[in-house]
Each structure stands twice: as C-alpha cells, then as structure tokens.
Image 1 (tube, rainbow, N blue to C red):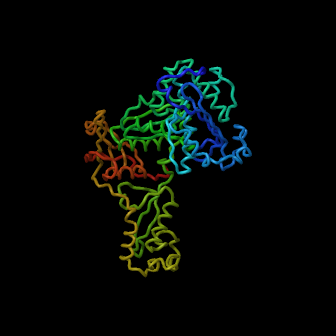
Image 2: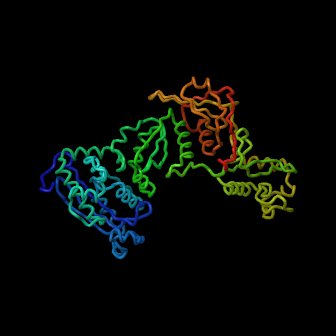
Image 3: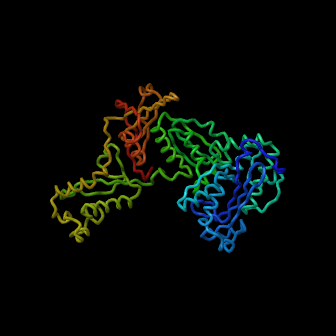
Length: 492
C-alpha cells in the first residue's frame, strides 16, 4: 500500500516481481528481448528494482524502434541475454512473475533461457486477468484503458520501467479500491488455475467436461480458429491456456480466441474421427496438419508385355481393392521421390518404375551406371526380378479390408454412459450410431464417402490393436454399400 502498511497472509509474505519486456517483435521463437525492467514488491512496498537494455543480437525493425523508442544504436553496447541470465534468474528466484499479458513476457523469458539450454519456470500472475476478475463490468483491460479508467499516473509507455510503474500503480490502486482480502483472494485464485486468455470468461474451464471429445476455438465474428481432440477435453484445453505460447502461432491464437465449444464422444476413436472430419470440412485457421489433400497418388504394379512388374502412378483409389496399391502420397512429386528411392536401394529398373520414358530403346539410365540388373533389356530373369520388386514394395502395400462387409466399432464411456457405434467399411468411417438398436435400421445406401489418406491411416492403426484400446468390433450383415466408395481425390 502507498503508506507502507504491512499486508497480511499471502500478500504479506510473497515477493511479487512486476516485470516488463521490450522486444524486436511478437514471436518469442523468432524475436528477441531488447529491454528488461523489474520492480520487486513485498509487504506493501517496493523493496528493489532492476533494469537493463539487452543486445538482441539481431536488428530491431524500424517500426519497433519508432514504437518503443529503443534504437539499434542504444543496444549496440548492451549485454546480450546470456550475460544477464544468471543475475536475472537469481533475482526472480522464489518470486511471483507478474506482467501485463503475462503470456507474452513469460514466453519470451523462457525462450531466451531455452536458447541457453537452461530451464526456467515461475508462478505467473497476469494483471490483465486480475483486472478482469476485480472489474468484470469493464470490457477493456489493456494498460492504456487501466490508466484512463482508474486515473493512474501517466508514464513512458512501451518502455520497460514505464510499463512496470503503470502495472504497480494499478495493483496498489486495486488494493485500496477493492481491499486487501478481495485482491488476495483474486490473486490466489489466478495462481491456482491455468491463465485463461484475457478475452475469455475466466470461469470457462469450470464448464468444460473431463470426457473424450473434440473442442473448437472461435475468434471474433465466429471465425473458427482451431479444432483439437482429447480423451479429456477439460485437461487438454487447460493445457493450451497454461502453455508458454512461445511461438507466433500460439500468441496469435491466444489473442484471437473469444469462445470455446466442444462435442463429447464415447471414446478416443470417435474423437479422432470427428476431429479429422471437422478439420477437413470446416478448415480452421490454425490447423495445418490433416487438411484435405488436393490430390492423392498411389502406385500400382502391373505386368509388362514381357511379364516384368512395372509401376504406374494413379490417382483414382478404389477402396475395395486396396491391396493392389502401394503407398499414399499427397503429390506426384512425393510418389516419384519414393520410386526413386526404391529403385536406388534395390537396383530396380528406372524404366519399369515409370521414372524414364517407356518408349526408349536400349538400357535404362540405372543400367548404364551398373545399378540395374538388366530387366529393361530382358536380361534379368522375370521371376527373380518380380520377386525383388515385391520385396521392395512390400512395406508400402495398403491393407486389404479383412471383413466381408462393414463393422461396427463400439465405444462406451462408463462415466457418462455414452455409447457410440462407429460404422467402418473399407477403412472409411461411414456413420456414427448411438445405440445397438440403431443397427437394426442401418443402411449405407445414399451415404457418400470419400477415401481419405489420414482417415485410412488412423482407422488401420486403431483396428490393428496398435492405437486405440478397449474397442469392441461387431461384424455387420450386408447393409448395402455407400453410393460413393472411390473418387478421384483431386475432385473432392
């Protein structure tokens, strides 16, 4: 407090390190710190302070120079972070790390220590979250809004010690305005839970169930930002909020997030398939993996006029004959690269592997280098060559569907009582039913599905016993077939 009156309980014994950083940009993984400012507060008074410019070992962009007032000349002779790391760690030892939008500052500090191959961790208190908790009636909680709303002293904004002074003014104002007990309870609560992004309801984690399912993060104007899955949605979402967000993607996602939605499932496989479908159909902004492939290629082996097995690249996948295909590739180049590797490792013929024009006369290029045993010229025994090809391609062969018809994969969650039966056919997820009774009326006719590489790999792993555990597989009688079993993925 301003008069130095000792505080009680937690706030009377803890040391709060009010810290602010200036940096070369917004990505802790790429940008660097240019200034550190800290004031240490305990039992109602400032007990120490420390500040320094930092040489970022990279150029400060001109717009950052204009924004912060810190120029390249100013930091040229400043110590690098490695030179101050030990002192900084020692000063912060045992303190509560306090910052405005603490994810940003904490993420940068951790990233700098990580570059030195040194761990760093601290209990973190965000004054944006504290303001939201103490003054929920207000919409804006950035520093300029706090200065104006509470009549705080004007400071040199966007310099470390200026922003530290503004933070401390807000904190001491809150102690006088709301009382020590209220502020202490708010601080205790915030330190006991993951730090929720400042634009989200602080109690959002109380609503999310600890069950399997899929969650979705939305931004302004209902824009879908991210889709994820977990066997425990509450725990997984909390891990997003408690992460360091030391990548530019993490910072942008955190700053953009406005609400969370979720869909419960009976088990892990249902969550995996639902996540995959939503990523491919809804195309969230921050999901890059599992996006639908514009094209999908595979390799087929057929006999040449001489009886030699030859490879050809195909795009039309027919799920009822998957065992005739080798490998799934997102581009023609990836497929050709795989063929080149197989040819080189196994001394196979480039021409028969469709890596050279088939209408050329004479030996293939590999043969001229002594890396082909002569199949291109009819000099290698056909049976021997074909056996070598089958061995070389064996690991790439797609798995044939082992059942006569579709199967139902039953998942049950004992805690919620939820049951789901995932209908799978030719490694494709066709339908989801919510009771055994629904199986009586099951028909796949009129159901359109597309063969998908990610879904294929996911289901193969799950049903082979190497992935999802605790599944019950029900062989189903013939129930018709989906209208679309195989399509050219380039048209999907």
